[in-house]
Image (cartoon, helix red, strand yellow):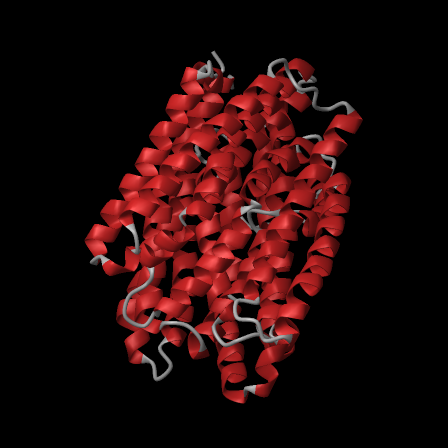
Length: 519
């Protein structure tokens, strides 16, 4: 696949992801306005985060990073029977492991909740809600893990669109659960927890059918003795940690937030959801598309093609990541006011959420770069280097969280949760720098010519964008004074103006957009 093909595939993935993010914003806005923050809603957010963390391990994280390079290696041999046998064995092994994890998780739910929300131990009612909803939501892990296996197979044959579309079903199912299931429960968030499970089943059904049309639908086999499945298992062990470092950091933050003011977990959740917008829309898209491409280039010993694809991925990501992080920093207040500040979501909730969004936004470029840097190792079946970087990243996050949050907590400073968000952003920068340095040290990545002019143009364009956005904000004033549709209009207008200035400055300084197409 050429770099132009990579860009087209990334655009398809991003387009489908955009639909998902729009549905996700609708879901978050409905959740915020219907249920507010604190209490049972905080319990649901914690219960939802734990299987989501494990999803990163067994689904689009560790399993995918170890499975795709081996899958592509077998595809390169051209033996379709061997490919089918491997997919069947891998599906059976994954299903068995995740079923065991789900059962253990449901049985151990009280201990898991105690570990990740120590602050809830003093609130028996909230603790009980969290345990119940965690048990309801845990089977989601099985559905989403098998769906991720199907998505990996589809991605490996260049079918990116359908897999990228499946999160839309997730968000639509949760919206339906809020509107129809939640009112039927004495504790409404229980209905949302059931919606999570239904969403996972719908996503799996869609992709399982797509694999059937390609003649690749897995038949579950006892695959633990299959040599390639065992190789995937060996590759997964280091990635169990490295691919989920960001989620580990989130869980560390969730545990700390449980000790802070009621609502802290909710404010961090909504901030993280907004950070996920550029990350999912573009960072994950490029990372997903580039992994099978790098794997094929490595299997074919095409060193030049490998280096070109990696250089393209890094530059393309930076063109989007730097202005995205800056935009979230500058527009945090207006974004929160436009999306969430209605009904049960108060002005104080909006201020606190904006504070943590601003703090976390400094890590956006690093989070997105990591989605390209990590596949550079996984494509070569090097899973140990990202693991070492992840260990340092989590250690940095814990140290920074303790250092930043403790004095704020002890002095009862409002907004102490923002220290958790800032620690997460800084830890993301540490992770990206460690991966970049390792690539340079190993000689895997040699920067092509023109990087310094590229960076200078990028910074100048961001400065122009910042001036435009700040000027418009000062002219508009308090966003919350406007009715909902007017808020949306002002926000879209401000984002559009900033994007136009950014693109115009880049072009005026000689940036050639065709470089992103690889032509």
